[in-house]
Image 1 (tube, rainbow, N blue to C red):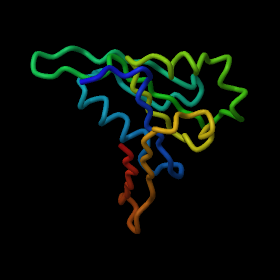
Image 2: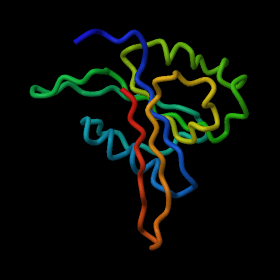
Image 3: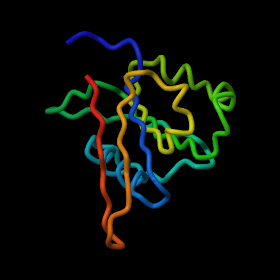
Length: 131
């Protein structure tokens, strides 16, 4: 398998309470990350090491959980060294509220749209996959 030159990026879009953070928590748990993951709204992002397992060799070494809710435009990304995060092929970046910074994301960003269902605990996901 050819090596990637950049991070894998997944943009998570949806209203408040539509399941973005819950998705990230389950995704990370599936990769073996045991840290309690909360939305990094005030820190903007957190980086977690994917632990090695005997039967699973991940394509990336780190999950970066980012929340762009408080980002007021692309200019706010420079002090966060966002380009450096994107340039590191060891990163899998999951971005909540990614539509806030869509212009700064790579063209091959994968998108997951979250929405509320008809019932209080019902949620819907729509995944845009581009290969």
